[in-house]
Image (cartoon, one colour):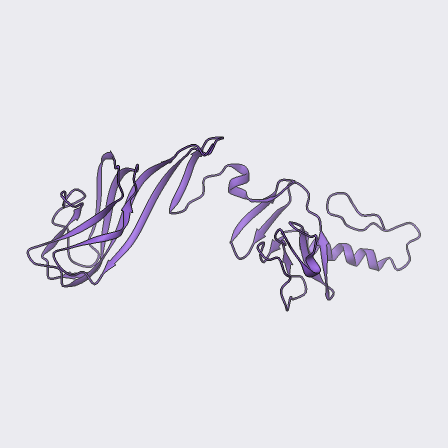
Length: 247
């Protein structure tokens, strides 16, 4: 039986007996390939109880019914697994990652990587050189809850070699004990804002002239008036981070 070049749909021969067989097979393949969605691309062993129509991209080193099917499309149909070999340009939505993939002829890549798109995330690479040098814009967040004592430091830090644009805060739960608080660093306690509000919903965007840091540096909240006895504040560090060439 001869298949079409791109979608591998079986053609009907002139003297074809039971013509419904290749027609139905073509329809089933189209049902997988058109608006294609796969459930996972990290498995090397077929799942135990697949439903009819479930599709996967077997990972490298696949075994069992998927042996030798690495990076192909495996679709469960009629009680058995069927392999569909992708062509360059095929698109698939991967359900567990909630992102679009594109096959470049050798591997499946995220649509953002394949097309050089900028994706929205906590750390976004906005440019990248051929040798691996890169520039990232980062927003790192932490909720400091159960505030206690004269000051509290974040566990997230301004990374070594980062250029900081600012640190923002939101009082999530009313701060008790202190009449207000400062946001800054050890030795510069109000660098990103002083006398900030203790009421829930109080916010501050503590922007500064961009400043480079040369050691990992935590953010410090300092109580004013009296020590902290409770409350929660969300802290966000906004910075630029370069990556050196990798080769």
